[in-house]
Image 1 (cartoon, helix red, strand yellow):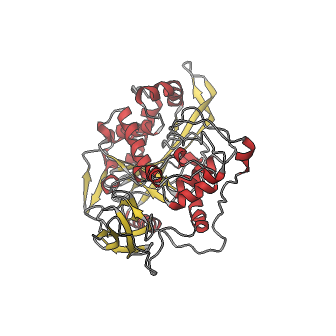
Image 2 (spheres, rainbow, N blue to C red; image 1 turned 180 degrees about the horizontal axis):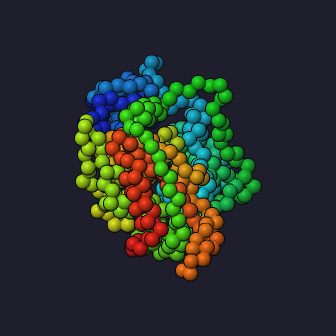
Image 3 (cartoon, helix red, strand yellow; image 1 turned 120 degrees about the vertical axis):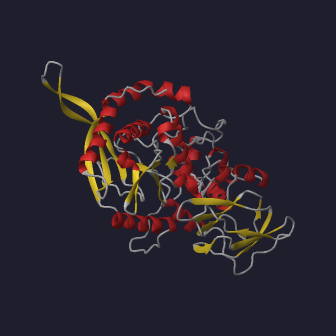
Amino acid sequence: MPTDIIMPQMGESIFEGTLTKWLKKPGDKVQRDEPLFEISTDKVDAEIPAPASGVLKEVKVKEGTTVQVNTVVGVIDGEGTAAAAPPSAQPANPEPAKAASAASTNGPSRPPAAPQADGSDETETESAPAAQASQSSNVTEISRGEAERVRSSPLVRKIAKENNVDLGQVPGTGMAGRITKEDILGFIQKYPAGAPQAPAQTARPAAAPSAPAAQMAAAPAPALPAPTPGEVVPMTKMRSIIAQRMIESKHTSAHVHTVFKVDMTRIVKLRDRERSKFEARNGVKLTYMPFIGRAVVAGIKQMPIVNSSVEGDSIRYHKNVNIGIAVALDWGLIVPVVKQAEERSFVGLQRAINDVAERARGKKLLPDEVQGGTFTITNPGIFGPQFGTPIIMQPQVAILGMGGLFKEPVVITDKEGNDLIAIRSIIRLTLGYDHRIIDGADADKFMVAVRSYLENWSEDIG
């Protein structure tokens, strides 16, 4: 019995979506709830599972097409009724060489130039290939049942086979742990053939190596070419939405920025001293972001105007502090929201930040999780800038940008009143605020409260 594949409605305010990628091609078998295609809306990117088991009989909507919700985008035939792909159907995956090239623009990881505060340097590292197969021809010759267990597409399995990678060692970031093209290419780049094994704390059980080092080194890493100079590449749906939202914000809010230097030495020493114990006790990485988040909550208590929004000729003061955490993705930027941050403990805030950041990178966020923010924190400092001037997320009226964390010589005064030069850990925090309702004095009072909370940190981190 044929089953229609429908463009889902990912939220009450979402009326259309762009089908960005088919994960199967006509004629492929699919399992119910297995990721079938990817969509992009004005709120979130997501993988959509198959509504039934069977064979993908027909693709009605091509990749890159925007359609209304509830549109039929394809058809699944019941099991045992496999049909050949119709001539007009578009394949789910591009040619392998083009696919690898496209994914490679998203593959390289970006090394931080300074201690990271958004958790991206603190997330679980990918498991290293603890074992390499002795023959490249059978490294990924896995049964269909095993392929479904590790959840990977034919293209992923082909790339893995060509590069002697055991898919059982590759962490999957797709829905239900599916291994995406970006996962396999990033894994190969991070652990090329012949690289030393990862540390013992890998996420998966390690097997004994069975190939000589010389043989492993012979397998070439995949080429990761950059876009061709002079090439015109259309914007993705997410990129075009980001462009539209940023222009709308600049046209809406009267942007002003103020920059404060903050001495983070006390917090840096605390984190270095308590980091391993904190992580062992709570099972979550300790980053700088919850320190900043707690300081923001303290600042808002003193200056609630920064946690408000403009409604016509009125100002709405929000009851809760819903902090948006800007997460840089290889394909764009998204701002998931940690709701009711003022009610969370330090550990609870750290857990929530890590959770939304990881699920943002895995395309597992729900539309509601990127809505309702009242104040945003963004951390370009992971790449090493002194500071930036971020654009406000509408309808919010303020955004805090974190610069890099650097050791710098600073003049301090001791108890006797003598001036001394000391090496301190300094970060520059930038507040972007809407001058329609926030005056400079109020913005600076907020920043003074944030700075004081951080420099005089006394809270138990749990």
